[in-house]
Structure formats: structure tokens, C-alpha cells
Length: 339
Image (cartoon, rainbow, N blue to C red):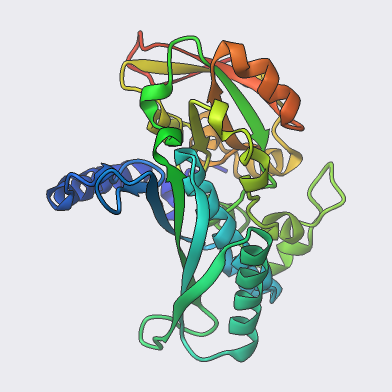
């Protein structure tokens, strides 16, 4: 069997990056002087009125094809938690706390059980994070979605005080990278996993045990995306940068929070990826390079802090570890993988 790639599964990360760059160029024409951060970061930051002490931070995302796993397992409440937590984690890198949330469900028919379970998950996660689920849209589109298919999208707005806004300008040479574990794949790489295990054609594979664990593949894949709101809540004031390790993994997300003239050394020997990732890699004969380009490999968030604050943050964050450091960009690579 040949080594599988994300592109083989229908997701071309290079093509995606190219079109997103075009989108960024097109949208820049709409950005006024009240926009602090536009497309390219994790969240967009806007000044609601001149000299406002409070800035608004927003983000939107989809739960992706993880819903296909929920479909097979007939368990949709965790998908609701996924999209809420994903969106929370996308505004945290700006130092923002969530304020309210909206959802969009596109579905082939009004399946009461599916919709109720999704909204139940949305509501529970919003309540746990003290966010108002203020509205949303449920659209029945049988010409677009078929059978049990649906799409779930979230939109979040949060706030941050102007003097606490986190931007790449805060990151300096010799800053330390501190990692926190993920709860699994979170909401990325599912098209690849479905291709590797041929889940659409053989859903019974979800009942197979993940070697080295007591979990089935289905149980491991359906775990909700972890929220880091409470983890970082009281520590955001000492953080220079925060990278949410989502789609594009380390290569895409770490560069979003550091200046152009800097890069990072990521030390692979500092952690062992969970058994699920090893199972995926061996089953698809996936190269190390492809794995670290697509999956979070057990790392959900990476905080960038000064050397002076590194020990303090490590003490405050349970299960955290030093995963690398920031340095001057010497080889035009933003992320350098070291043994």
C-alpha cells in the first residue's frame, strides 16, 4: 500500500492557502481604520467606536466532516460542543473572552432528533462557558444536502480590553513555547481519517479498538474539541502569543502568532503523540511530514511566553510542557522540527 496523503483524500492544503491569500487581498479593500486585525489571524478584531477601551473579536468556522462520524454513530450532541469550543479557541489567541454565539445548521430535512441533539450540545457548551446562544439559522436544503448529511457552522463574538490585546508584536526572540494537550483530533483531519480507514464504505471499523487504549476508533474520533477558556482565562495577561493548533497543524498556525522575522524550533522529543495518531499513521502508511502537517499530534494549544514567565505558566497550567522556543528566522522556515 502506498503512503496516503491529505490531498488523496480530497483536501489540498496548498490550494487552500493560495485561495485564502486571494480572499485576504480582496477583503482588505473593505477594512476601515477601526479594524485592528483582519483576515489571516485566528480572530478579527475591530474597534466598535473611536478610542473604545473594549475591542470586539469575532471568528467563524465549521465542524467539518467530523459530522460524518457523528452520523454513523448516531450521536450529534458532541458535535455541538465541538463547534462552540473550536470558536472559543479561535478568539483566545487575541486575549478575548467570548460574549455570544450563533449557529447555522444546513440539513436535507427537518430531522427532529438530529437537530435537537446538535442544539443540546451547543446550549450545554455555551452555558458552561457563560456564552449567550443568541440566535442561529436552520436551513432545509434537500438540493444540497442528501440523506442524513448536514453542515454545522458557528459564529462567535468576544471582547478584549485594548491594553490586553495579544498580537504578534508582543513575541520576541528567545521566547518560550509551552504546549497543552489536545483531547484528540479536535475538528481537523477527518476527511483524511475517513479515507485511511474507508469509514464511509466500512463503518464497522469504528468498533475496532485503537491499539494501546481501551477505546474504539469511533469513541476516540467523536471526542469533543477541548476548550482552553478556563485554562488560559487568568493567565492571558502574561502570554505574548497563543496558537490554536487546528487545520494545517503547526506549519499554518504557529506562524500566525509570530512576527515575519522570527521562526520557532519545535522539539519533537518533548512529547509522545497519543496512540490514536500512531494508529492513523500506521494504517495509512502516512509519512511523519504529512502527519505533522495535517494533525495536531496531541497538541491543542501553544502559548508563547517570555523566558521570565515560562516557569510561572508551567506551574499554573496542568499537563503543560516546554515544546520549543522562538528564534531569528535563518532559513526561511517558520517552523523547524528538531529531534
